[in-house]
Image 1 (tube, helix red, strand yellow):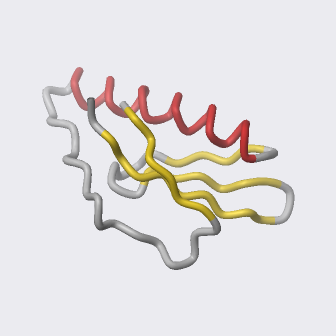
Image 2 (spheres, rainbow, N blue to C red; image 1 turned 120 degrees about the vertical axis):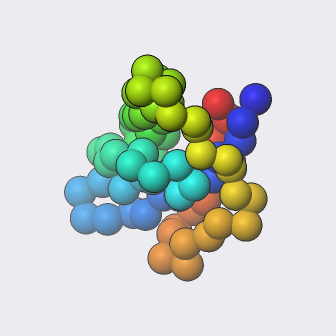
Length: 77
């Protein structure tokens, strides 16, 4: 299992979500629950794309941080 780091930023109208140590994995939702669900789907989609193209998955970086995040938490893959 790989554990990446997800960050969430509460913005007007919803929640921006991003996997900080997997470039290109981001989404937004109307609330935190939806943002978490959509981010999980985005992570699976990007990982499948990498593998289909013969590209490795990025290695998780436990030290990655975004000082602008309102919340960060692990996202398991």
